[in-house]
Amino acid sequence: MSRYLDPKTDIVFKKIFGEHPHLLKSFLNAVLPLPENGLIDTLEYLPSEQVPLIPSFKYTVVDVRCTDQQGQVFIVEMQIQWTASFKQRMLFNASKAYVTQLEKGEDYDLLKPVYGLGLINTQFDPDENDWYHHYKIVNVAKPHLAEIKDLQLVFIELPKFKAKNFPQKKLQVLWLRFLSELSEKTKEVSAEWLAVPEIKQAITLAEEAAYSPAELASYDKYWDAISIEKSLVSSAGRRGHEAGWEQGRIEGRVEGRVEGRLEGRKEGREEGIIEGREEGSLKTRYAFAHKLMAKGFPLEEIAALTELPLTVINSLLLQEQE
Image (tube, rainbow, N blue to C red):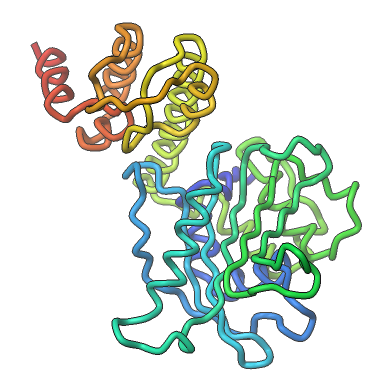
């Protein structure tokens, strides 16, 4: 019996959609809000310049330039997100994909539209049935008559997606079921999936047997990074809510801390990452740092994940070795 890996993880998603353009073409045509006569005809991968904030947690990115059936060209920038604070990152990356198309002095007419597609593995909209979110730039007074189509964002809340509740296009349903349901716990795949050649191939590419020992180690490491970040987000949010920290934004902060601070935060800024933090906060970060060291994470990544200076990480390493 085959054992499957979760296609939402970095290494599996990129093996399926980052190396097989016909699979990505099928997927994008199914999930993007494209007109019937404007489906993707061809696509090419773009070199990604989106440098992740946390080196070991890459927020899966696949960038492609697409040509539709009418010969029009547009760019799709895709990411998978695991935490609720993602909208600004998606907007930033999609905007960056838009503005970096031009070299200095080139005409703005050369700019091509950009879709930002976020596959969200968490819930952020309180409406339990609302899982597909399409954002465009519109004229507020005439939202249905005037719009700027050059930058559009699509967020899909995968945990909410339940095919039986929605009358979507069949291929869209099958692709989203594939992403939502396939995991290490899958014992038998749906016959409907196997009936679609592209999805059948994607299932084969998600089999554990298709991965080398080094790739499987990266797969496990990816889950470790997700688990650690979620723990940091949760603990940081609780501490901020309870203590009412008197600090503004700190560059490189762990996502989710903002929600915890809103109730208790007062005006002002703190300089540095460590200054002013409570002893309990430091102990939590030290504990995370020791855990990451035990798992073999590089020191630079540990510093980024815990927001501890590299000098402190080096000191902790020396203590571990003594």
